[in-house]
View 1 (cartoon, helix red, strand yellow):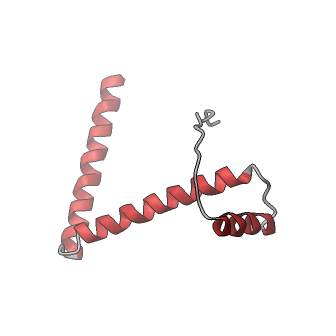
View 2 (tube, rainbow, N blue to C red):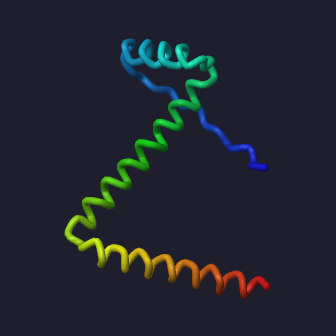
Amino acid sequence: MSEPQETTRLTITWSKQADYALRTFLGAQGMKKGDLSKFIEEAVRWRIFHQTVSDAREAFADVSPDELQKRIDDAVEDARAKQYRERAKRA
């Protein structure tokens, strides 16, 4: 079971056209008024994810696919080793 998330109130200002378009879209999807917050939070999370991916692609654009895979594999191996060591300390 997940823990209840702490929320924060946000006031935004945007065009009436965007507001109408979003509310019309949500209504057509069968969503209710309270679903607006959920929709916005999901949109923000996707935007951050896509920007992060775009930044990573740009940062590693000059790295060959083989070298990039090696770096990923090394990082995963290091993370797993660290996690294993932390578990061993707790046991």
